[in-house]
Amino acid sequence: MDKPPVDQQNPLLELRRLTPARIALGRTGTSMPTTAQLDFQYAHAQARDAVHLPFDHAALGTQLAARGRESLLLHSAATDRNSYLQRPDLGRKLSDASAQSLREYAAAKPGGVDLVIVVADGLSALAVHRHTVPFLTRMEEQIEAEGWSVSPVVLVEQGRVAVADEIGELLGAKMVVILIGERPGLSSPDSLGLYFTYNPKIGLTDAYRNCISNVRLEGLSYGMAAHRLFYLMREACRRQLSGVNLKDEAQVHTLESEAGTDMKGNFLLSPPDA
Image 1: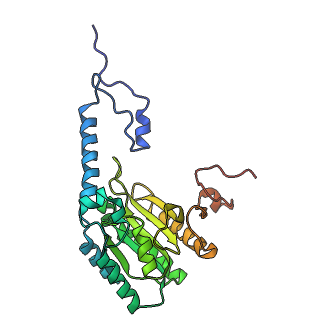
Image 2 (image 1 turned 180 degrees about the horizontal axis):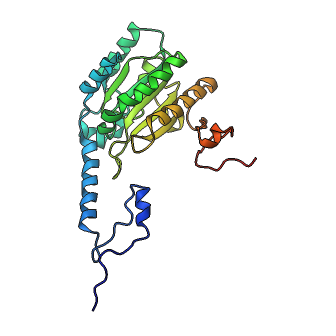
Image 3 (image 1 turned 90 degrees about the vertical axis):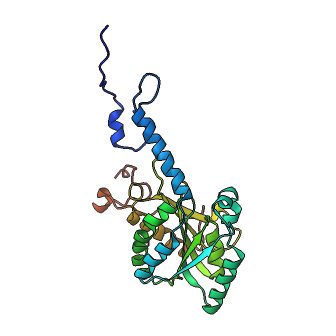
């Protein structure tokens, strides 16, 4: 009996050039090939490591200081990583000591600010380590152009998204944006999320926030993320709201728009008929 050819053409192989999704992996008998199985285990290990990687706030603070940016270090009510993972509610609020420290800072510098930038480890400190400084570099250019007053960058250990609302309220901020490590996927252990709130205060739900996700080199670029974030912030200042009532309609420059077609919204859609 003739053996089947070892290298059989798979029509799905062409798709692998377009996506990191695990497709067209092939098979050995009734199982995945060894290489594909090892790749999966490696990706899974990367995701687990990202969740448990300690937040190197000292190194991040040093990088910010080198750029002339002051930073404040706070801690959530989650005392360690285990309590953070098992008690999401503790990561959404500051510890008593951090809250008191922030009140004292705000009392020493009354008047509030336009914008507070919070950086929290979330579920991937790796994402924060890799992307915070490059993204803040893009933000600084636009903040200066808008003329907004900004507080020191607030670094939060064991923080979740809602902790930014408490920080913004204590500092009397008009707006707050938190840069946080997102839940790692099997192809994206370093995805950074941005969550923006206008008029932040304790007790707000996700309905009052706008989210921009998957900010990383293989996902949404720093420039595009900053473009969308500043559109939301400008509109929030104009309309005095954020969340589900504030849609991301930032204009994305394409070949068609540069040629004179006014295209808004999803840049993947075809241009409107003339």
